[in-house]
Image (cartoon, rainbow, N blue to C red; front, top):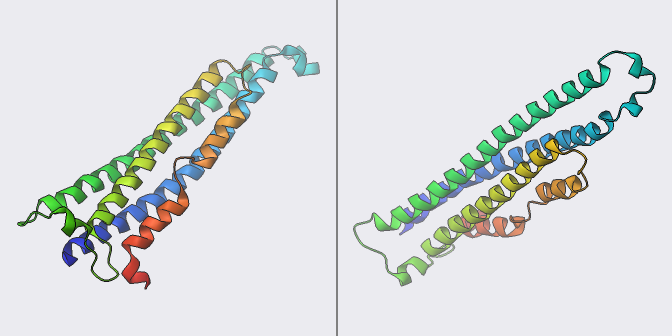
Length: 199
């Protein structure tokens, strides 16, 4: 039993690394989204020739400026897609850890019953605590990944219709909030799993 708990704790150390990676990706995505939003909001202004003032006498200036902004936006959207692929890799990694965690209790020579799975030894977590913690971490990050995908799809639609930019701020707030990941709950999971190391 003690050996199995230690194996779970090793997995949770990897999960912690994935959480740090997730947070870095989160910062990157917010920055990319902010940059894309700024360009989309500018496009509406740039499409109106009245906003060029004296520059209207320069032949092709409006088309050149619009093209430059559209190219920049396309580059940012591609970067956002790459960031989303990295988020997906984190989710797949967490999914694998859940599956491996289940395999740990199936792979032993003696099958564990429910009472054994819920048994605590001293400060150590139970096997059920470990499995439940892994499952919860996977589920909240999978949900958040899906939400992010929806937001990124929405900003691509705004890029095609920059006149409808009122909801960009709300979408950005969705990204900033990470509403499906209660940080306190994540912290409690780690505290339960590493209880004997903290004590």
